[in-house]
Image 1 (spheres, rainbow, N blue to C red):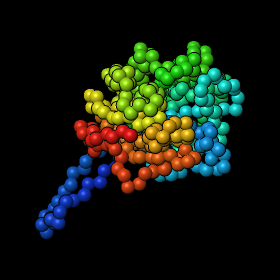
Image 2 (tube, rainbow, N blue to C red):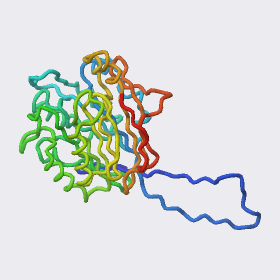
Image 3 (cartoon, rainbow, N blue to C red):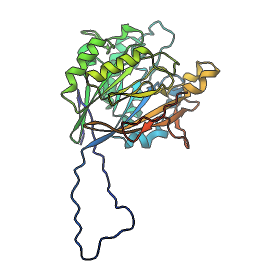
Image 4 (cartoon, one colour):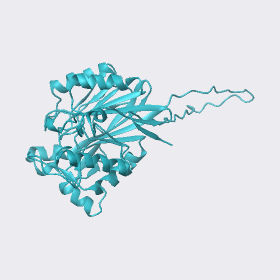
Length: 345
């Protein structure tokens, strides 16, 4: 049984099977004893990038198509799957003046609940139809069984971590947006997102650190269509880890960025688009990069990162992700001391 509560995390033990090596057999008549090995609990976490279920993806969803089916096994086998919900799930509200506004139908909640254990709502489209629409989204997610983080009905909720508990391990999730418009920020008594103010972020991390075994921060940051993180992203990710984060995973740039370690902690700066039809809005040189994303899969125990890898996804013409078979993910390591080569588009 899983218990979800705000300010919470998740965990599932990793079962390790020890097998004998070679063809050697014990000498007949000799008693061979095997001492029990205590394996610390571990969890497999899966992170995807931006999930936008309006426009073309929304039309396909309305026809009954499942946006996540192609990655269903990976999403459902993970102990926790997390993504960034980049649209306002609502029936009310008026467009905020800006170039792109995304509003998803409430039917979007059911497939999210089927595949995801939590979603971040901290992004630059959460408030596209006003605070009333954002509050409706939070209520629809709660009623539909989709835990969220990075936003709330007020600033206190928005800056509280979601803690999901499984089999003795608690994992905290914090989400932040620092991409305009800042008017989407939660107020003292008004709904909105958790804005990425450095001092507040550090205070939020400090407030939850002692309550969890592992702490993940999922910021919405960076520059669109930039394949390398900005100086701001690098500096902030290090401050988060110095404050107590065990893993930092980013979204927003619409393309994948690189990954690196800092003090033994993993930072993946951008996973790119997971469900999106962004390729309709860009020029030829960016169509393929904006279709391609990474699915980050990590195994962690109480000490932090154990192993990790990336799976490659490519959006079809509906904006739905499809696995790229036969091509190894560009990033990953069997142990945290070796990061491998991370190739961006």
